[in-house]
Image (tube, rainbow, N blue to C red; front, top):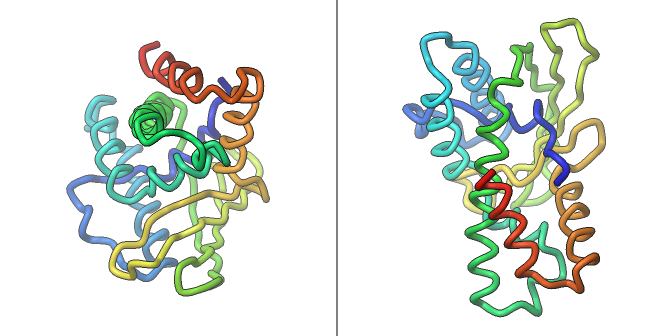
Length: 198
């Protein structure tokens, strides 16, 4: 199973102890979130297990995992049974969290800057940012798709890295698995569960 972009999703990580400390203004929310993430991942006083715990708690709080899971399932979400959807959502959440935590050691510190934002509607704002890796690598343009229907609780729904949507990439990967298995959602669920166990 193709891996989700390591660096991009590592930007979602920050301290669980400050879950309520972030601005509800999308551009400030992203800036504060990422600044905290970089600080925590660079903290040598925190071991991998502690950082993993931060990741899981924060992802559950600030990433719209349920919406992301349904999106990546595609049209099959409309024809699947409630039980299958529930089992898929549970498997996807575990898969998503493991995808984040398993990539902690691959992270390297970087300079992060919010460039601007574009309010698409009352429900969505795109926050534009640039990342400059500390190892001298090329700058990376990342746009954050922030769901703002509840203005008091912004949620991350996607990252667009150099024009490539990570949610869409994941959807295409799952679609390939489903197309190869007669759109059997149970097989996709099994593959997600296998990923979590390995």
